[in-house]
Every structure is written in C-alpha cells, then in structure tokens.
Image 1: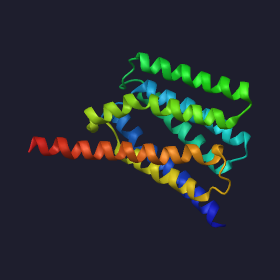
Image 2: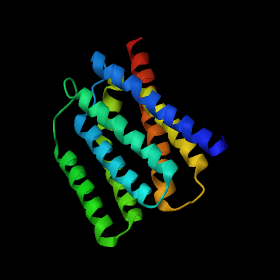
Image 3: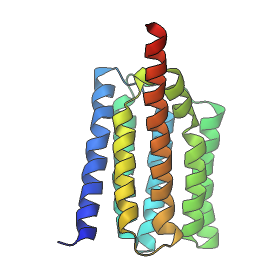
Image 4: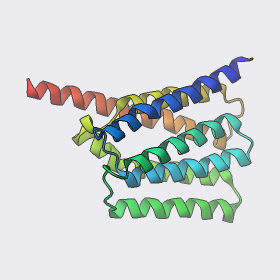
Length: 195
C-alpha cells in the first residue's frame, strides 16, 4: 500500500469519525443543526463529487462523497430537534445549487460547477456560522476539526492540480478550521463571562 492510499484511507476515516460527534449530539438533543444549511451542504458536495468523478479526480470525489453522505445524515437525524426555519438566504442558496448544475451543463465545465458550488456553500454556511457564534454550545467543534484534517489529507495526495481536484478540498480545509476556531473560541469567551 502506498502513501497516497494510506492518506486517502486516513481522510475517509477522519470524515466518517468526524460526523459521529455531531450525530450523537443531534440524537441527544444537545446539537441543534440548521437543517437547511446541512441539506445545502449535502447537495453541493454531491454536485462537486459528480464534477470530480467526471474529471477522474478520485481522492477528491471520495472526500466529497463522504462529506455529502455525512451532511445528509445530519439533516435526516436533525429533522426532529434542528432548526427547520427556511429564510431568504436559504432559498437563495438552494437556487444557487440549481444554477451551479445549469452552468455545468451549459458550459460543459465541471470546474465552473465546482467554483459555483464553493461560492454557494460559503454563503449557505453563513447561518451555521452565525449559530456557532451565538450558541457555540449547540455545535460540535470536533466534527469540523476532523473534517479539516480529512480534507487536509486529501489535499496532500492530489497530483493533478485541476480545479476539480484541489478547489473543494482547499475550501473545506479553510472553512472547517474557521468553524472550529469560532466554536472553540466562543465557548471559551462565554465560559469566561460566566466566571
């Protein structure tokens, strides 16, 4: 087994293990996901997975497939206790996902689909980022941290630096470390205020 396969395996394990703390928190009722955000994330990573597969970018496709399945599980299990409100931003993000698919078909370019989905993903994650800031106790920082590590492992094995190969893993590295830092730092700040 070579280093590439080992890192892909580590990435996969981290992504699967990473979703577990969030799912456990959702099932216990201590983690309250913004359902629309998780559905958007699942849709967008699914689109990007298809784009990566169409370009034979298998490490990235594996990362995005596992991400898509994990976020879909959060949306399903979070349906009971999560925040189901649909706001204007959520509708815009869902429309953006559809636009990303249309752009891919019109321009016959998986790269455009990936860049469109990253942009939409960033905007679609704003409600969860705001929630993480306001109620960090209702978010599972470990999920985002393990996703950061898994995405970083994927970046390390990329040999073809096409947009469909590196853009989404790089984005996931950056956004997941941001979520982790916001949740952890806000918990510390709020804890200090209580003392």
